[in-house]
Image (cartoon, rainbow, N blue to C red; front, side, top):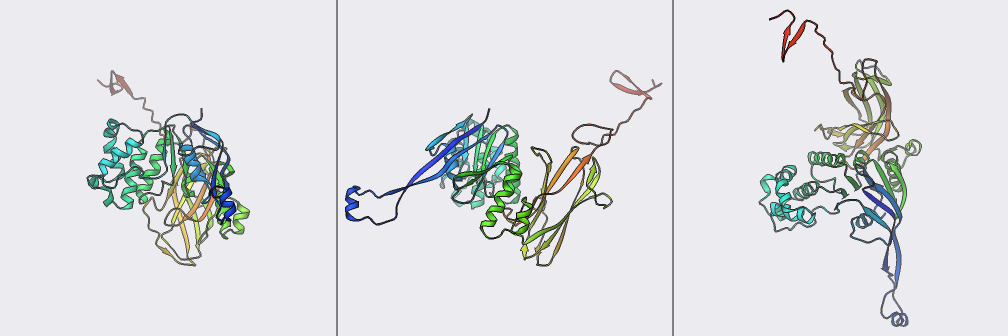
Length: 415
């Protein structure tokens, strides 16, 4: 049964017309200004099943925030309905319910209580919340003295320790520094693996594609496209970049590629452990994924990364890494530079076909210079010595010169 079902939801608002009334009209309308009907959402439908994460993307004014308020019950739909199977927690604004004069500790209990947790439950989780936020030395300080980063870290730490059946997130994945963002991503994955339904609205397309199973693209209140994240995100990105005059021929032709192209991927190749180019790997084999970039404009500290998925009807994320998470400083790159990034690994992927997304991102990790979905595909083969999803490199040892006496292992012929 679906955790969250949105059926044909529509939302209408009225706004006054900005025009001056003649005295006669003013009298006839009893002083009321004329209003104009505005439909912010029209027949929006989707579902989020337990253990699934669905993303909502769209430009500013597309109806994303209104949709989340309807889902959370803050606004009622004009038409349609929202059905939630279980307890829902909606994080539409980090820190809502925090009191600036209260200490960090007091605000943990206040905010968690507003999100539906009992005081006893909060006491049991308090140490985990503080450890997650990394603010142990500041919990007795009023939050009005916190930096914005500290405030957001504490608010997110409280929110993700609530145990809802349905979690609704609105632009809350950009909190804190790179290390804290990584921790947030991992926590959200844990919530998802616990069979919770998660609905996310974010402009961070990399996070949406990485975390979400399916994506709904809203355009002026209407669902323009809905489907697997690896299909919808590139379509939306190409469209939004094109609207700003930055689309290119390569985007139109390749479809799964988008970016602003200050840095551009020029070549992607898979090599075996000897440096020879290959299109298939044996399970357990050493390999190198090499990505070459061309720099067209000056950039500072770009992020280079890869994401591996199984090449199936419903792709599964198998590996994801980047230079930011690894703490690698990529420095300042000038126009004309060629950059080569190598990812050396031992192939422990399951047998079958796989594809790799390659990317170069802005240092803020939210804008992409170049993103190529399925930048390269390859096959993982296995020999007849094993079966399963991964080659763990098992060695088998048989020793016929031993025997067991009770729990004791002895040499044959021994006392």
